[in-house]
Amino acid sequence: MENFEKLKEDIKSLLSSVSSLKELQKVKVKYLGNKGIIKDLLKRIKEIPPQERREYGKRVNELKEFAEKLIKEKENQLKNLELKEKLKKEWVDLTVPPVRTVGSLHPITVTLDRIVTIFKSMGFEVEEGPEVEREDYNFDMLNIPKEHPARDMQDTFYVNKEGYLLRTHTSPVQIRTMLKKKPPIQMIAPGKVYRRDDDPTHSPMFHQVEGLVVNEYVNLRHMKYVIEEFLKHFFETDLPVRFRTSYFPFTEPSAEVDIGCVICNQKGCRVCKNTGWLEVMGCGMVHPKVLENCGIDTDFYQGFAFGVGVERLAMLLFGIDNIKLFYENDLRFIKQFF
Ligand code: DAH
Image (tube, rainbow, N blue to C red; front, top):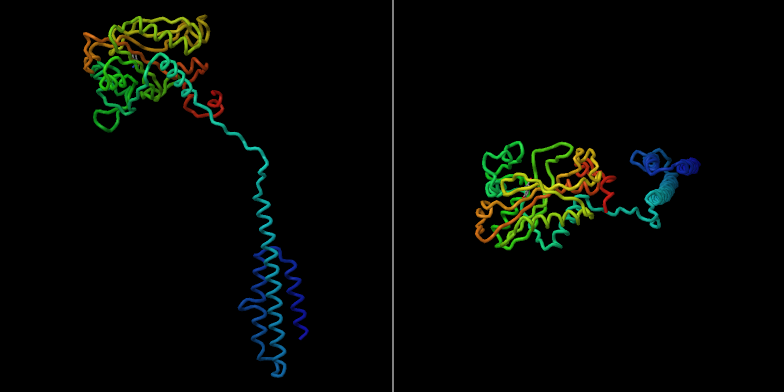
């Protein structure tokens, strides 16, 4: 009989050394399990002399209740402890000031906005066209004949649909606008363009802003004025601008526009290849064939057009020497701009 007191002491001391729910489970099985000590004691009741069985049974039940109570207490205690620890681990200091992750505009976005704002102030409207463009709008209608090198597979990304491509310039938006609206037209078209080019100064995707003015009596002096005004506002200085005759299938006459090198102030440097001049855009009087293709009466109307490379202007404005920096999304680079 004194065995029961000893068993109680055992349980007590065993439980005092338990420090996890897992360990506790083992103790539970050992005493209260199907093959546990208490079940075993109950089975042995047959071996007890009949007159002592009643007392024996009572003692075993008492032991069982004792064990259950102690184990339950221990379980509560351990669960509480676990909860406390969890809360401690997950505690968040709400008084710590937040890390400020304020976004910034991409330098190309900043440059595009700047270009658009200047032209809008001169009365230009903004037009848009799709990046997957009709081949005839991108080439034929712009008087780019079938055998023109720009049509070569080298330069153009064709898409799976017959007659469509990734636009190689924003000039097809000229066509779309003239087909849609009657003169007077005074529009710009900013957007992405695609070419099979990839080196430190060329990216397969880049941005252009196209410009088109169609009206009666529109002439080269208007074109020259608009472009010079734009460049002066863009670079915020009265820089030298020159028009160099050139060739584009969709303009006649055509010109390329150079500005005095903003890097070296025309003293000669690596960027301007020691010429003191930087080419920044193409322009010209819209070829009569292009106007006619869009149903515009060339007896009454003339137009001028221009196309600017946005990356080129951004590189000059911010002094960036590698076009790839725009597309690597390195936050250390991108965050420097507004
Ligand atoms: N589309 C030409 C290009 O991508 C740029 C250009 C030149 C556009 C002269 C024009 C223009 O509208 O008149 O290289």
